[in-house]
Image (cartoon, rainbow, N blue to C red; front, side, top):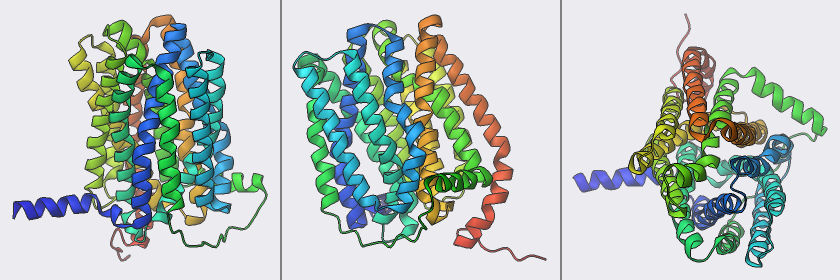
Length: 428
């Protein structure tokens, strides 16, 4: 009986993989994301090896993420107007070109920091289009829309499973072959997701959105996000965590080399531990069958994330630092994926692309400003003190969001009742 129950639980966690298109996407992404994480770790190590500058680490992070802040709203408008499937194939192809270009420059020994910044800007532009398109495309890969929350959680599981494997592999590859091979392998890995996309059978979808002027489409999306209380507060909380909390990642080479006295393998272990925590968080969310209660988890895990990076910043013991990275990964994953699930559940379909563009701004677009801020501040007061300050801000934000939960529930309850998630309550 125990084996049957365990089998049913596993089937429930993996239920989105019953959909053919999502299964193809999942398998292609499994390969591609490992390469992406290898490139990210190798790029950070290469910049720090060439410059010994925490500021330039922050600048490279800024360069790769600032285009999302600028271009994601425009991408959201077109994600609601154009074929998301074709857009996704285009963005993955462009990202592959960027990886091969970086590999060529590094393997030929001519790479300079300005090359890395320029290619980071290019990749940032590609991802500013890719993120809202990919997030809003998830629902089109599912035959049963009620599996949306599970699909988002499995996507998060995949992303962070790759974060567990990719950095560990990158640490070994950097030590034995150098950064260039990591970039080359990332380029090759894009073939997996491109071939998976080409193998999908996507039914033709009539775009019913009226083709208004771009400015009008942007304004309509902004007003919808501003005026719908649950979406507004969820995005504000996500933006705070992204700005104040996520920049810890760009300073990890400083902690790995200068505080924990390690090398590339140390950085790989730290990132791997964060990935393991995120995997645990994704599995927790995938096992849930309802969106109800996720608001409380956003508040709780925002506080857990802030406390985790504070403890990590104060640690000088490698093992304790690894444990805190696990806690940090769990907190960030549950907070981000819960936010995504609620947003995609309550959003109007004709505005899905634009809301996902604001999600991209909150999650990725605010991070470059945080990276630049953290890199500059760390150059003055040191990386540990910088992360303590940012972690404290995350905990304050968690308290503020928790106090807003009654108002959020009041506005979101009618939506859930209309969708059948909550029973209709008869009025007097």
